[in-house]
Length: 343
Image (cartoon, rainbow, N blue to C red; front, side):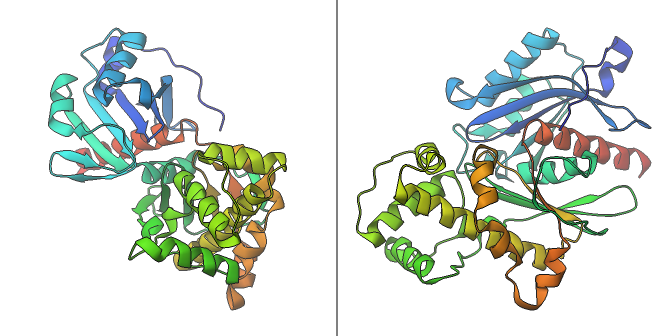
């Protein structure tokens, strides 16, 4: 996505600013944004920065650094929207992927915020797809699409999913925890891998295989099923070895990963009747785009019996995550504020 150019700011406009962040297990993407009604896109990105979460003791320190770095910790920034791979329980954000706890009241007090809203990271991504041109990203399934829901999913530290539903004001987002549905194998080898993964747990969900940690789980399970040694200890090592083509086990693991992702994406496209299209996001897929395009993703996506004709008209595009989550979180904040004002 081509990001908007940084915009000038004055004190009169400061009250309309939103500090937004897309916080994942690996990176926290932070931006300062404001609404620009009547323009396209209607969200102006003033400044942005990407942080490595492992290098920081907490989210408060990251946001304070961003404010000091870009705006001198200006007190006029009173609203914050966070896109997080998790959910709110009481005063905390619950996520198995975050490196540190997020206490909402403590963060609001420390940053002197009037409001601090939390949305799911893939809800924010889905919201931001409203601003993408039809040609954004790489075509995985090249099809025209028709008006209707848009599905966004992607493997990263976890497996995220959300749906953008078209409504009169441009769209509303329906969250989903589809990554926690039961893993559905598509052939005998995948059944054997599922059986191995289920030996020490009562339930194997899709994210246990279709995520960064899931790729490593798959690689190790496949090694056990095939009776060979597993060499690699990190997901990135598996994908890199597969992309080089010099490790048959890694190639088999990544091939299965892409094929099962195609099946899963097809299932969700049918469930939500996502006629407008499917966007593949997350932190893993852009790094393996060539492998993905040469894999069985497309054939497994389409392999849904009588729904094949419908899926043949659904475009699937691979997009860079980038600052989309930040833009989407801010857009949801502006939209909520507008509804509150007019209510």
